[in-house]
Length: 275
Ligand code: ADP
Image (cartoon, rainbow, N blue to C red; front, side):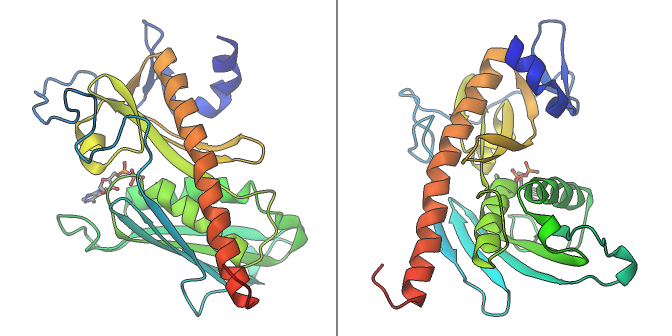
């Protein structure tokens, strides 16, 4: 398929099996575990009452933190995430300065109390990976050449997690960057789609992520539909992959509207206007 060929460069973490299905390289080869957890009822409604293609509730507050140059607090289903942006500011240590452009640094962190079982505090392999992929997604929309020798630092702190935190974090980071006045080609919106009990579903909860068949986090710049992040856990056929991608991208357009509303609300209030 032509589109698959075009996507091949960004499908680096994936492989295609003999049947032509797209799999993440980290897939279990065979899962013999019995799946006893029910994720869908007889009417294909999910356990939280959502339809398969229904996005969870999202609430975004721009400028939630007083000390940062730009910030955001975001609630998305069971996820609660803060994003704080500092900069552009002088880079320390100075040898890291780039005279041609600013550098963008992103740190994703999940609080010890953010999950059911206490998570060991501090960076781990997962948070290092997420900081990297989120930083690359953000770096590709920010006009870094406008502020050489400086850095923009983005901190994403997950205080409550319910799957989809990289998407929630990227969405919050985008609002915080806009709030800080960082010049960008467009906002970033991010959402995952996946597969549960054989059906493609949008915005998986933790249980659906754990007991489902696949999860496909996507981030785009809705203004151009450019894909900024695309990862996959699990196993999807080529048709399912494109169905999930399409579903996630449509949701990103909805999310962009919520981001814009949050930014407008803050700045209308700041100007003393009506909401
Ligand atoms: P994302 O949060 O972007 O979906 P993952 O798929 O790695 O990223 O994680 C899915 C969910 O699993 C997280 O949102 C969180 O609820 C849970 N989780 C991740 N890491 C841990 C951990 N160390 N301990 C407990 N739960 C975790």
